[in-house]
Image (cartoon, rainbow over all chains, first blue to last red; front, side, top):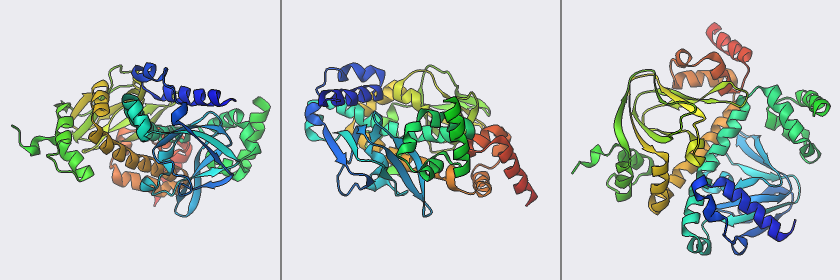
Length: 199
Length: 199
């Protein structure tokens, strides 16, 4: 993908994030001067190394697992892959009692827009304001979606997810996939077989 | 002029944020709400499929909100109790029909503001926006915790915790809806309830 296409990808994600009433205002915006590319090595991403406070972005390459600490045990709630919208709020230190962090399973590139950047805010005051509100609402809504997924029939959800995300199995350890789906490793093996047969 | 203690919503936001009740932007926010609106037991605040979305503030009364999952089943989403703001989040984000429904199970008093009016007010008022961003960040943490509990907490212990928090929950929600809330099958939920009764 060219840089132009990558910026366009982020723009499309932001348009989808906006309320329909605000989408038209985003279309003529030149995002290029306001975005930054993060190139991150595999491992644990630390907010201390790169400050991404108040950012919204799109994954250009790589796989990210979002891990949290629950009574000393890691739990994975979701993954991000190429083309997924990411919101920095979930790993920001000020509101992170669950010790959430990004596990990068591969070298990862993310294109980010710092929503609180002064130049961005001055250039597009209305858009910067509505994007801040939408990103904030989206961060809570996104977690509700993960909660809903856990409410679905476990086998139904797991098999469908595996069918749609089979390529992730090449990069993410089985243990982490099982943790995400909230199933045992033997159930994962059996569900993978079903997904592969019917996928 | 009304005394500050009549500003129900400003008061609540003052409790949440530590700002004085007389803070101008809290009073202005309070003024955009309609109410008080009175509800009898078992009346709906809103229904799945409603076109007009509102943000609600619950002053008195208890109820539950439920959502329709993609497999067509309903899931208990959460408890409605005094002091909370509640809405159909998808409608607030992007408009369109409500994907959730909420019923008050006891006589209740609520205030409401149309989603469009809320958005307009929020985008134009930077101070209030910052308050909302902080409250939402806290809310993300609560959702993370709920997700962690669903995945990691001993289910029987979690059931007891929920019963303590929402006494009589089984009178207002079906076992299937509760099972979805815990992320377990109906038969597992039945076993959990039975083992709790046997203890």
